[in-house]
Length: 430
Image (tube, rainbow, N blue to C red; front, side, top):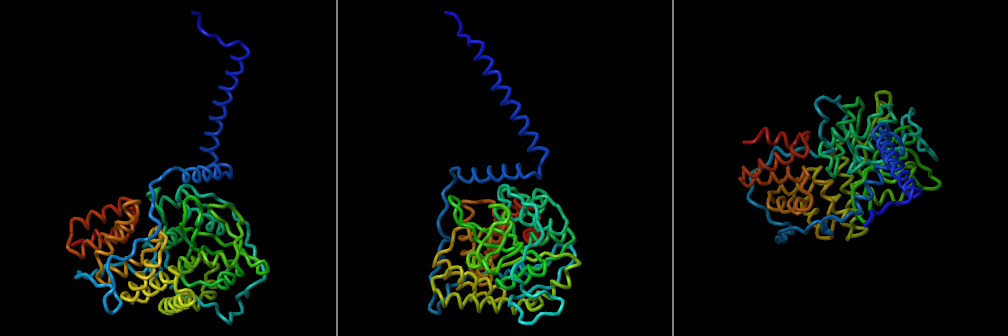
């Protein structure tokens, strides 16, 4: 039997197609390798990120698990017999910057001032800060990308890959904490202030004075579901009642209504990060002068959370905010009770990817088994959460399980070699 041979026209067409595919592949590789900051490459990476999110993955539970122990007669869950944990870090908002960074001013509460110094511009009807080049996040890179866009405003074109290498050495790290973003900003020669209990007017006041703001919010995208998300605010229109944002996920100049932003912002106790340079220092300190006392800030935040609970007793986020604010006030037993209530009402399962105050409260009141169970519930599906390994290690150590505790600290550092709390726990290990 003779071998089958394509007719010449068909062979020529096939050859042209093959050559075209090869040339296209070479060109695409060249573009992606050499035009790292090009918008086309950014969109390609963003598309790859979104496609990856659609792929099958291990099923996640819907909610953070409810507390292990039932409350006692006084309404509080029983405590374990525990070794004290005095090495617990300060609340992330009040942690000092990295040793190599310039010191930032002290930090504090959030109540929009009624009177302003003469050098401060009052809230304007509309604000549009100068253009910032958009950047689309790569895998789990919301924090570094948003920070990179903020740094652009100050003439610092640090790429998201460079920021990520410092803030999240593990590329699959699900969360970059606000204090980690602040540490990089200090490293870049800028100053930061992190606050909670922000208000819409506070955001507008900062923007009116030429200060962009990063806010930590919720983001619900299908099929990924609920997750935390940073947004960079660069302007607003008071008549339309909407902010203009640079969004690492959805793109540049994404509009969000005042009400929607506040609802999504509430889930992170309305946390905001202000980055500024030396030229803006005096102005920013004047803008935030009434917020620079932690005790007052957390007291106001707790009062606000209680008001939100009174308005909606089923608001699990308000209960969680109450717990976080009480941790800031060092009222750990009350904080633990608030977290128990929030978990009973139902919190998104990924909540503790981003916020870790329940671990602190439970450790402080000796509920070490609760910490271990809570950490295990997250780590069973997502093992590279360095904070959960760290807090689990503290609970194990308090229970006298020394070898297991050491392994948890070492695991936390394997996932994030820059995690100072875990390094301190391992270094000071007894």
